[in-house]
Image 1: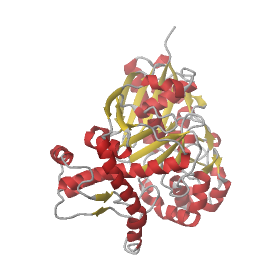
Image 2: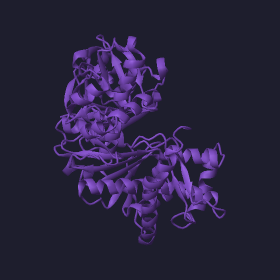
Image 3: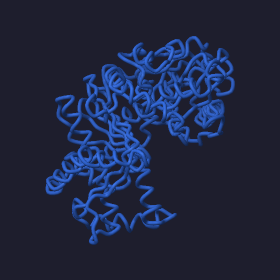
Length: 501
């Protein structure tokens, strides 16, 4: 009797990753290729070029692994921000409009200034994708009138593999969180009307585990997959990454330390951060589970510091020296605080705030400045943790799982551990997006019965950074000061700069 496998595909910003997994969560084959980023009209990316690259990647996997006949189910995740618009022939009227394309910013500012309280109350999120829909409707009405349905990137690819008619276009529930248009698993009539979005242009909403069809004849011929191989609705990439790090129980936390710094905390309670709007509500791929997510730009700010403060083109040339010098300093960087908002805050959206050092004096060196940059994101996570505790009335976990390229910075891991008072745990596996999507597919195929009870066996710890109690006590004072300054001083100062920014 042949063993059954699932194929997991991650459609990332710069890379497409493919993995074949068995029921024990072992990756039997893995490959990666670059995401084609062919520019189209108004900052969009050719979505059919991405689809063709996915087909080619699947074909490579099937041929090179020799496991194609044993693939029982396919799961796909993709960027959660961004939209595509299709016509009745499933042709892209609006190619993929990614989240890094800032065309929507005026529309989002307008929506939040007028209806921010309502949007947060009903959706628990911010309308990045909702504002993109408004942008296309208002700024390019001739194009938008040809749109039959708006879909996500992963939703476009999955439906194209199947040959789904436009009337049955769908989106998975995890990806709703950056639309800012959904309430209780359905599109909010109230928010849609306020933003002038007709619900008939929005896709139907599916559970991530729902099987939505089988591989079509044309896609099967090109990819080598058996015609009719089932596909699930899939997930958003961040949701997959969090699940793929084993974050499934109340208070579990993950630090996705990449270009974006995403700090996610798991909760069984459907709660909304109405007061601060700093934690976005995301449905997890598994039922009755949610992630509260705060977002910053840790990797990007880190890169900015190396290039603009240290004036280095080769990051590796200065990185070791910076880390070594900063490591010798005491917690708190000699009373120096950095606020890492070079382009404003993302959660909550506030473009007026800017990056700031507080307490800079003659005694500070580049090593103090660098350490203060690392500490600033730990303080941001401390801020998120406090909001979570007040919302959920539940204890924070005793450890945080860290993924992304930033996990290689062991000084940063130690700082975050001490600030949060929680161990920082590096896992041996690095395939978090693909593994998370594979878990959803395994669950949908009945090859895993309960993700919450069976998940832990899939993970093995590589390194654990434990809390230094002395540093934790010192950092608590700095973290509390940071939070107070952020809300009482920094934002107020930049209110005066509104006309200049």
